[in-house]
Image (cartoon, rainbow over all chains, first blue to last red; front, side, top):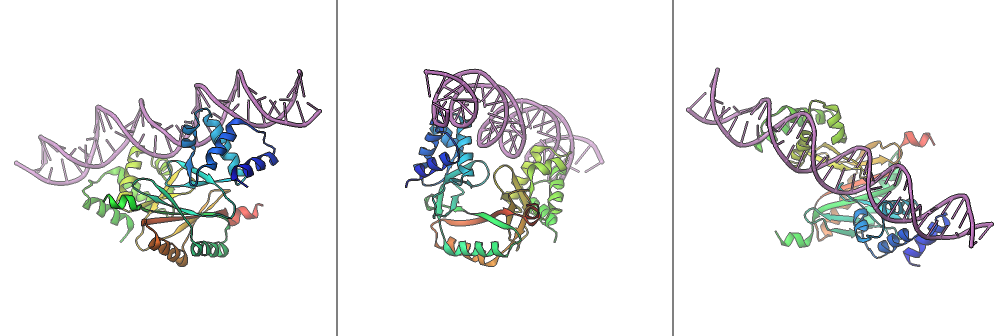
Length: 139
Length: 139
DNA sequence: CAGCTAGACGAGAATGAGTCTCATTTTCAT
DNA sequence: ATGAAAATGAGACTCATTCTCGTCTAGCTG
């Protein structure tokens, strides 16, 4: 089942009605493998109002269909939440390129930290900052 | 050697002149064990202009005397960079409280990921999101 | 120690991402 | 088909951060 169908279904269950703006945002997210910023979505969907973009992202986030990716502060990005999939990101400090990675050991280590903590840990983020291969070549 | 002296010395070496604004910002950071936002610094130092707060933080960051802590996007926080010390944070999703932690295994795992990656990894962040003990009690 | 000048500073304007409001359009249960 | 409720988009608004620019000051020079 495609993520977009899943999303639409879940929104229905949650009592949301259909609407053109939300559909377009969902379709755009469907086509992205990694994070997109709210502003880019807004730019790429001229017929959809800013408010609707942010509203939709918020709703999708609450239903856990999408999650926020923080990559340095300025702008927030979002990406599809595919069940059973879990990755983190490396960001290039020169060009901003975002590359996903996953690592079981890292996850285990984080899990253990959560176990030992007083916090009830709900989620986590890992961000590696560095220089991507392309920018390394350029000196 | 206190961090503030170290910072002042390093700024001197880098060719910066002394100045009241920077001194005050440095003193404030000296007294904080964990992250403070630029805006809070601005508020707590009424005699220092906003521009100087951001300027100083930027300079300190470039000299690696301070580093950015991203905790969810809205506001950026900064904290002292004590040599030989390295920690990450847990944020409470309810009250926003920030608690530092460190874990050698986690660091090892991250290091290994960096080794195996095409990126030349320079730094990393880990953020655990959850509910702090105090907020757990409140239901 | 006075003069000088580059660098430091602060006030306030400008920017821009994200939020809010509200009049209008759509949806869909009846 | 109808109408109450939800969804939408234009644009005003907020507010953290950045920029601008005139003034001030550290600290070198003589």
